[in-house]
Length: 155
Image 1 (cartoon, helix red, strand yellow):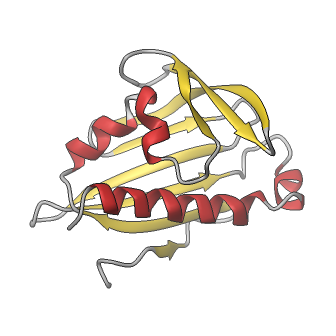
Image 2: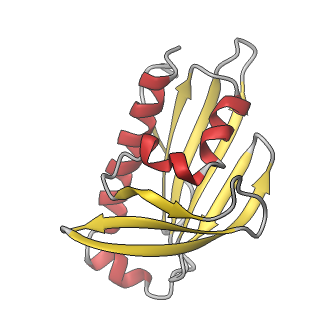
């Protein structure tokens, strides 16, 4: 695998995933993921705003609210952490059922293989997400997010 490229991953039905090598150890990347006040720093979708509410550090079952904006319309979303393994895995679920998942795998050279996925098989209306093009749109957002992380933590 070319360690500078972002690669698609087969994450199963109704899931969009990409992976990339990031030049930091898993703890550094995980620290960014568990601090919701910093999510706008890595957001590649352009939808996450700076203002949030929630715990200082995410953990299993934690709820957090993020201000967002799409199509010039501001709104808030409260998500819940549904999977958590320190420095390895975090997944949060949107109230409508779709989820964002981050998996971190360390390498011997201090870099981390990061896989981000948008999973919508359990969404309340997965067909609506497909109708409005969210899988492709979120795939592009994931790629942009991973590029931002590669720039922040060069290998």
